[in-house]
Length: 303
Ligand SMILES: C[S@@+](CC[C@H](N)C(=O)[O-])C[C@H]1O[C@@H](n2cnc3c(N)ncnc32)[C@H](O)[C@@H]1O
Image (cartoon, rainbow, N blue to C red; front, top):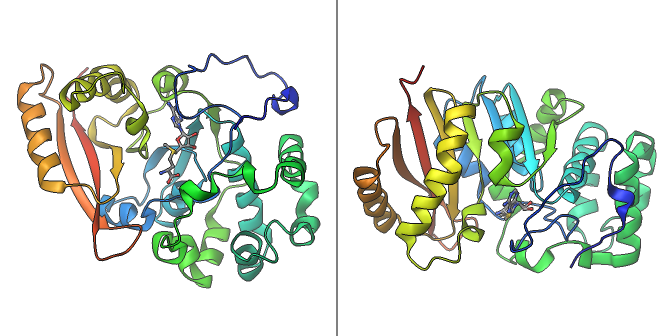
């Protein structure tokens, strides 16, 4: 689904060239919440305290959990500019709306997107966010990737630290900045658009949707590495122990990926600076299973 009214373009924004063969498009239906075990991701990353983080925006959940884990700054990007608005809405709500009203607004059937809950803070919303909320009145839940992202077994209180307890929610309120830096761009252009170096880069499962014209995982991984990860690491990843979480796999086969990445590490041309690891977390959907996160680490002696 795509909502193509141009009222969503911000002033001074330049037209974007977004490839049309991606599953994800600009101004298409949004993720309201992550469908990953974000809390588990923060746990395996450890040492987030003081980190400079770059993340795909999506629902903003990794941004919120990274700040709660002590990140000093989190910058974001997304191919779908509507995700910026979801993040903005949640940010204002975390800052100004009580925990149980936040839960009621997003998780109860009777109060879902209940305008009375956000009425006191609407004055803080950007114009595009106000339009987005108007869109909800027209398109209803079709505006959200509801079925995809909200598996009945997904438990936000288990997967998201900032919602796990009231205390965490109010702790985040005290930490969260008033503005989250967002650039509307495709992952392939991120290294051109951002100029800082980051300790941690979070790419969710975008890799699932890239280079799908190749059947072979080896070829897809080669292209992901040389076309996305290497340029990103060279310009934007901390030279000393910078990490890119470049794929989230639901109930992924950890040993298979470990041996695949070991093989990839041995056979790639440019392997002196980068190492790969697989880390597993409790599955976002429970069932006593494990999800797997693929990580590239950089210890680079480049000038
Ligand atoms: C891959 S999706 C899947 C949802 C994700 N598992 C989560 O927990 O939010 C995450 C985000 O990536 C964005 N995205 C997908 N492909 C992209 C690309 N090529 N460049 C930038 N963002 C992309 C989508 O718009 C979406 O907001």
